[in-house]
Length: 303
Image 1 (cartoon, rainbow, N blue to C red):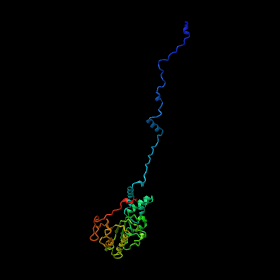
Image 2: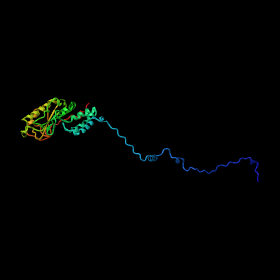
Image 3: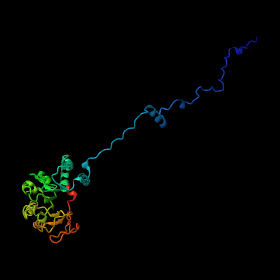
Image 4: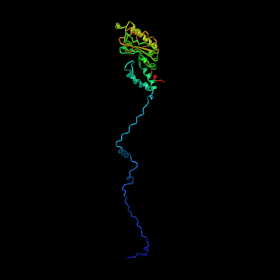
């Protein structure tokens, strides 16, 4: 057995160097893709939300903010009032249907003070009120006509009145009297008085039915004179009648005799007179009709 030399006995054992071939890694996937990202993509986020709440209902739409009626301009409010009272046109009288047709519309007066001051002049200024109430074909016997039932403030905004003559010509109601209780003194804005004649008692066909010759003609002329005296603001007097009433008859001639030249005469559309106080009848409904201009709507809005 060969012996080591003395030089080799004390020398340290040499250290082997590591192999040159790299050791394969056990992680086959990069770290960046092995662990999911803390911030998912949009597709991942939508899918996760759908998976968590599959039956989630869509959120309801937020209601739009409303507006106050009084914030509207005055001209728009007036148009709304005109639409609201569209079925209340015509002549207003004491009728059982007034509660349904008119009364329910006037609840606007109870909303607030501003609506009261706007609706009152609009309604009463655009309606025609009958001085003495009647039912079809006969007068209504009541101690309190429609005018007397209104308040002084409501009567003060009326611009049109109507006097209907004919019903009860042989026995007029006792309540048809011009007095302070009727409230005509409060009608300070009336511009037009409409006189509608249904019957002419002077006609020969009514000879056996009239109370006396000239009785009802005189009674009617006193009513007309009393109304004009109590309402000095009247500017236009409009006459209209049934087809059987002649302008040359005793009834119309008596009524026309109390109209002074200071009033403007107008002729209603039903009879179609041409404005002549004597002579043959005319059926031209367009000739001689005098127009009546109402107050502008903006005048009803208080300052």
